[in-house]
Image (cartoon, rainbow, N blue to C red; front, side):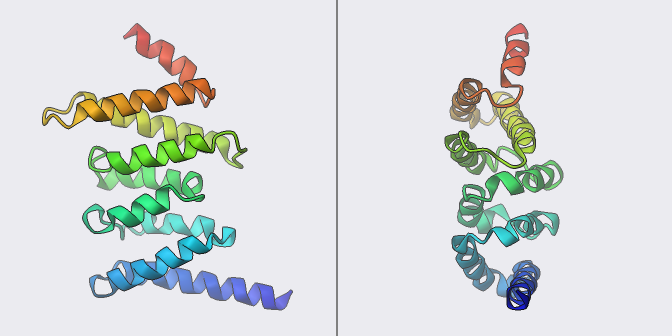
Length: 177
């Protein structure tokens, strides 16, 4: 029992120091490799710790696109979506992250038959992301939006079919606009 607690404590401390070093340019790439290994380990004991990457604002889309894509399509994506949404609200352009958001949404929806422990959080944040992405893409003047709009509508259809969150209610409201 004590060995297990010590191992968990050591792993948490190691993970948290990795996150700190991830934010330092000199160590960024090396730490990203380590974090990718940890991600593949799929340890549920640290699933909440992944959010710290967003809370500490150490991610950078231009450097971390592949890593973020892996992280946000991992089995932890539902748990860290809240932190990702908050990060985007303060520090990101949702259109810049559209590819990652779409991959994450499809990944979560493919797994939607499983019970999420915090299902209401997933539903709320997924709806918020897809609605926001749709809205931004639909009003994008640079021409990036048409494919994104179609993918958002596909995701919305999947959410409606799987009766996720208030997608039915929001769909009716959209039709009224």
